[in-house]
Image (cartoon, rainbow, N blue to C red; front, side, top):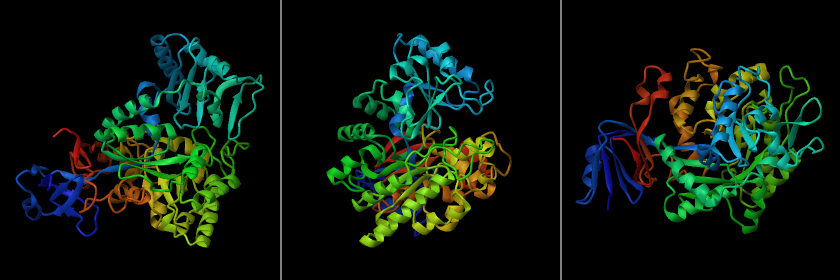
Length: 537
């Protein structure tokens, strides 16, 4: 029996054979018919609910193809330092939290970025600064980039970090002029402190996720590609078991845990329409915010800095080749142009091995995450190797002042999905939340305009030749993520047999006079699996 019929809408199906429809019929969480009002309305029976869309625009549910979901959910109860204009504003926020918590309890926070601070000239902060704000609480604050952390003296002492502590593999401990740790930890060195912070239980993580998915529905998300660690997977399974998981999740497998997956023999796509296993996740390098992205040539004004290699190329190759032999593709974080080149070299080896074994390329949907800057000699290689480009459009508008400062002319090929789309690369979009907001509409606006909400850096945007169309942006949030997840026959479009995941919008994004008005588009209702999960109409 048909459960629900929606009529009188302007439904953008993203399906080539029927791109615009008026009505949609839903049964048992899936679409059974899409078409004109008169062709769909008669399909219902006496018990079928009928609702008019009142002429509103409907699109498929949006999927964030790169998000840290546990981190995002847990941050709802931490000190949030996003967009604070100065170091002192950050210290004030930490001091306010210290006044609320008993002495000795950890203060955790996220989102600081020293580049725009007005009171430090962009210099990194130190443990001494934090000591003034919270001398009696251990403090661990993750940078907005996720590739550095800021700790106070108490946290460093509790972690046993002193002037004699060696840099761990893939990380660096910053020191002051006297050789003492100054409170800034880069890349994997952050683990020296984060691993002693009392961990939340899986139940606590699941509860935070359940609350956070309410916020996700409000901004139009119906699915996620998650990059957090196994605790996130266990929490997601708890929600699924309880019947409260209301987002479709592709769960990537981080490097330290791939051996366990291989031992079990699970392969890419294992799971169901709600929760399934994805790819092996590897970090090749760092990030622009912490100046640790691995570059072919040094950073502008820093002749001795070419970034940090987190995973050497030979180790990456070994892991990727073993994973692909066992039925698991790889998704590799690469931001600097040398890191991107190393990853492409590794994927070239993987494609050769797959050809030798008779594995078709479509069976191993490898990805590069971020691709923030790429050398001209490598631009064509993603398409040539059938590698997915995973971009976060809002990074371009957030990062461009820092990128211009440290990458100079190399920015012509930075944060550039346009070039990859023109070459035929499959492109997916995400947020990298909590680095950026998980609201997809600012991401769509950034992709189409290359401008911030305030209009900067100007009417044409930053490197306007990198702009994409609205249709291309929506494709990268719907059809393309479904394909990457191996769900192209049931997700990403509004067509018969597909999952009933959709949004009702408050205005028509295709009829806006100014693309900057995309920032004003809001969902008024979100459906996942044929159920209204959130609505205001």
